[in-house]
Image (cartoon, rainbow over all chains, first blue to last red; front, side, top):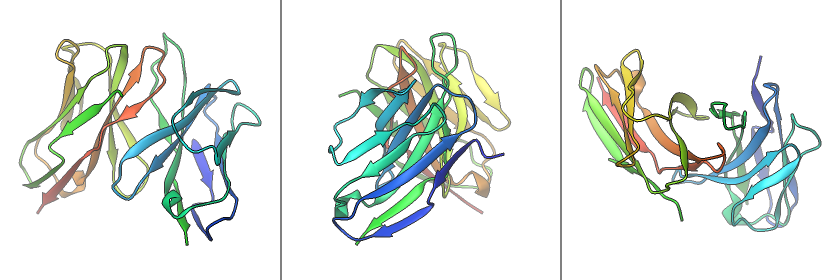
Length: 115
Length: 111
């Protein structure tokens, strides 16, 4: 069974378009994340969601918006795509809490290419 | 900005060698230090360290944390070509959130 899944795996689109990437986890975790990994392989957190509440919002453009319909899903919407948005986007989840080990489980990634 | 620094950034060794990868962090409201291995796709979890001085082992890999000096090391003994990957280190804050990753160490193990 896939623990954290993302769709699509590959996304090729034109500048200016709006696109969404979906993420689902079946681990019962409380917290989900979106990361961007650029061409230099640097992994940077973009958002995290806990119990449907945005708890971290790094300095990403407001063209990016996370949407969580329920605890198991965290989708990433991107408006007016730009060339610099080309990257691999990883979704991850973890169980939050002061008494819980917070190992993160990553999805397979979505490679976004903006032409 | 909280930083996680890894060294070396890249390393080339031959099969059978032992390697030590370093990770240092700057934040003081620290909860855990995590190591991941990333080959072609998503990072996979290796270790989580929360206490100083306690070594964690998994086969040929081991890791230890020094919370006083704010660093961790990842050791790989008797390296194999399958160990070739980028090794990422990350730290989380007191609430187990706000993961900050280092730039990674690219390890290449030659036959």
